[in-house]
Image 1 (tube, rainbow, N blue to C red):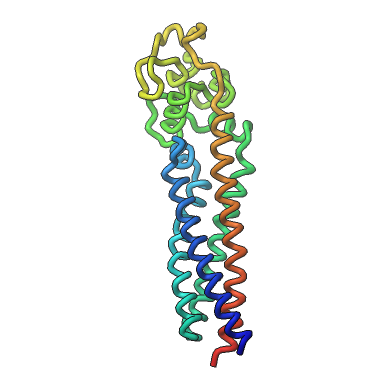
Image 2 (cartoon, rainbow, N blue to C red):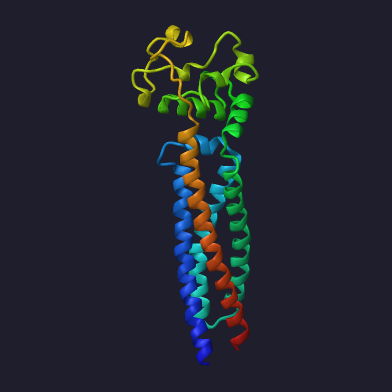
Length: 245
């Protein structure tokens, strides 16, 4: 009987932790999607990262609700609620595992070569309305950078060069009066001629990689921590289920 009481309290503790973990996942998901650092366009333009972020958002909400269900089932010694809690938590465990794998898989793609390949294949220029191109235009203007490693990234072999063979790089690479407000270009002709001070020669990759690594590392760490808590909670739920009359 004493062991059963201890298990009930442990079940209660782990469900409180699950509730807290759900809130943490919800906060991380909102942070990645809302993007406080100005990288929402990168998140939006990559389906893998977007999918992982929304999975974590949904799991965070579900776990917050499941925490209450588990606590109530343990206190009331209700076997039906405990089994429902176990099954639902198992589903959440699997979904969250998929979301964590998405995040950790994306981390391997944060390389100079991968981003350059994406830019060559998908970037269509300043006036394009597709998500990928508008995302990169926003980033290059706001950060006063150009391409992955510099203006040469828009040369031979890129989609941009095929569409605009006489233009060495997009206007988004040109220096502006106020980059934050996407103000007017200082001088487009001087920019195209690569005159010093009129074109942004530094690449965007270092800042982008640092920000995305931060997103992925935090998401993965929180996800793995919550997965561990869920495993213990499911174990105690089964133990209580088989010990309650």
